[in-house]
Image (cartoon, rainbow, N blue to C red; front, side):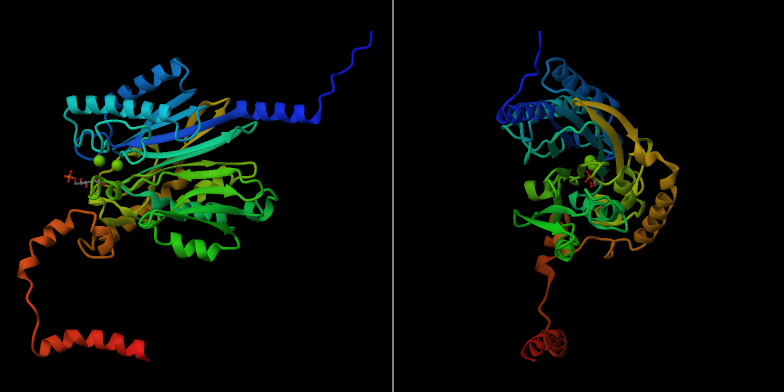
Length: 408
Ligand code: F6R
Ligand code: MG
Ligand code: MG
């Protein structure tokens, strides 16, 4: 008997491919919150991490999530989860919320500092965004091998990732693949948020590099949210963009950010995504969220802030995502190759610290509006006196000069 291979109509094959890729779709969710820490705004207590891990373990057992990893950087508790429910899934966000609530209960019981700090609401309302915790999520179709890196920073804010992500995805002096890998040669599309106006723009690199830089060079206002590969629109990176102070209208701790990046095989190589962090660039944050300081890449062992509540730190954990499972992590900045960066960061920290309360160590006025400084300045309001007489002319001089320039 002759057995023939079945012949599928093209449509059928297409549907099968679609079904297969649906099956391979996985969402990586990194959700973080400061729910209290030990000895001040310093380090997450292991018992709070265990409480959160218990909630996630139960969810894994029930099949709600595929896998998870709980960690911390400084005083921020980090939940890394994989599942098949897509981004902004109410079920996953509620799970994270419940894990933070449980952890916060333990924090309160232990009397930890700022227990429950980032949980701005008493009740969960369908989506964790806007309630305090930071969120970075991406849904992908898993490649045959799917390496990812998760960056988590403390004592800074989402714009801290602007410089390293720009360099990894748009700077050929950092990422050799932009020049020599045909899959990356067309470049990447940057989705940028204006946190003050609540609007978004998409710009392409390399064509619109200078426009991208015109925006993201101000990391306190413009934040890279997502990056896509131009050839096929594949998502390459995503950053959490919550600004707690903009949500709560006052300073309630820094909006310590997280980012997820896919690496290798048409994305930056592992070494290319890490390379920009070899330069400890200045980021807003540090003490009381009010100072510029160097972002120091560290291993998990050093993921805790001390000097002047800092300096700001970033960790990088590498995983393989395999059928949704998280294989790893590897602690990428633990490497001696970053020792010199850390040394330079210490020197910069020392240099910046010597400015004390002076700018540019202290943030610019607009940023300080969201700190506790306006309360202090309010006290002086009734004490200002109008300058009159010859001295007034001195002050007025500048105004006249400006208007003269306008007339010219
Ligand atoms: C920065 C941060 C700390 C605190 C500082 C004062 O993100 O969390 O630097 O701002 O330790 O904290 P309080 O006001 O709670 O004493
Ligand atoms: Mg804190
Ligand atoms: Mg923190």
